[in-house]
Image 1: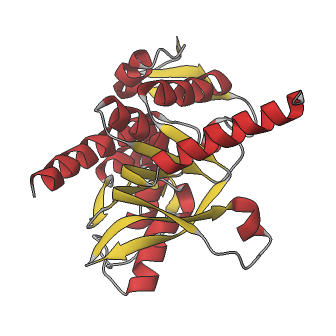
Image 2 (image 1 turned 135 degrees about the vertical axis):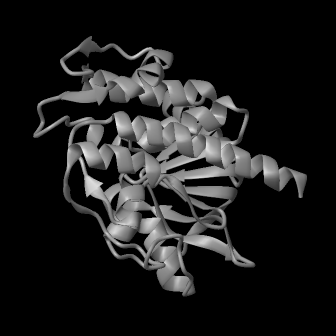
Length: 263
């Protein structure tokens, strides 16, 4: 009689590799599991697209888990309330059109809603490059996070995706890689990644949404990556702009996917 240990291992291996195989060809790959990336994955999955979210950490959620200085509350503004209510996150009114959310509840809620909508999340994955064909980003090149951290020479695998989202936060990792390795110009004032400015919470929130866009064929940016790419402000533990950026980029990516389907 087979032991319970074998049954457990077989179940995990069969399930995981089935999930992995189904993700080899995607409509959208979201790189970075912060709030804008999770919200984008939610809306893309809700629209019926095959969506994979990749996060290098054990627990997706970006900087939202820790609130501010590990005070696990965050602030959102009035404009983001429709998203919060749609995702059924608890909140309470603060002042001057702002609201307080428990950061642990909110982050867990975002992850739950995205996966319930149909998005697949792989944690402990790092994206080290993109698939680049005929002047267009067409997927991501991945490896285990521990492999890259240890500097091991282990070749990667790839996920093909019709559109890719850089939601990697302050580092803008995917945008930097595309510009550096392929000698191309991004849709910014300089043609490259400009880098973020110091804190201006109100302006940073506004510009997060404005800078959310397609910066190269097949490559979109959201959240703090959007501000970093276009050279705008950071904003600290206010997250309404991140949620709104995620919703906006999902709509832009949906429109791009619909257009690609017609070609």
